[in-house]
Amino acid sequence: MFGWVVMCACAYAKGHGLIPDADSALNLKEWGTLSTISNTDTITNERAIILIANVHAFFVGVCATIAPLPMSDTLLLDPNHPMYEWQVERNSKLGGVFPDLKRMGVTPHAELINGRMAMMGIITCLGYSLIQGQTMIDTINEWVGGAYF
Image 1 (spheres, rainbow, N blue to C red):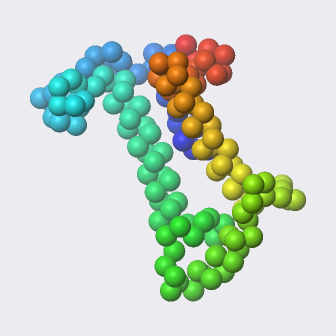
Image 2: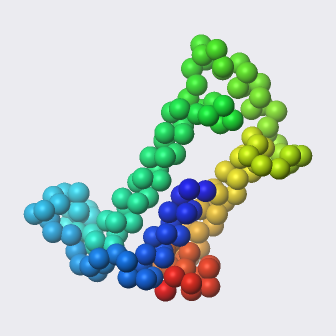
Image 3: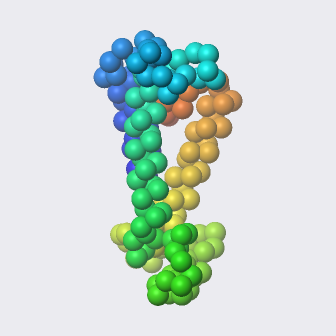
């Protein structure tokens, strides 16, 4: 969900001119190879800012994977860890196509569905953007009725 917030914030910033010198290319002498695409062209300032914003969202996801909360998945837990058996047993009960949502709020079942829906949204947005030949930011703007531009 945090990734979607960052993508919508990037679309808002682009649409309202909050990105300074959005169309100017990064200076190769100042930024080095970090600013190049295929070692020939440099990326624009807008793309660099959006990239850094999404890298921060990615880092939050990495931190959640490395140090999971008690309600999180056991993706990287050590099998020798004391919580491992409890986590595996608990997570095996969560599966299924539609986990039951008997309680409201932040529950493991709700988090599982939230993650699945976020991934389906990303796949849909990427596929639609590729079919239409536009950026994901423009697709998000189109989906929210042109609210950003």
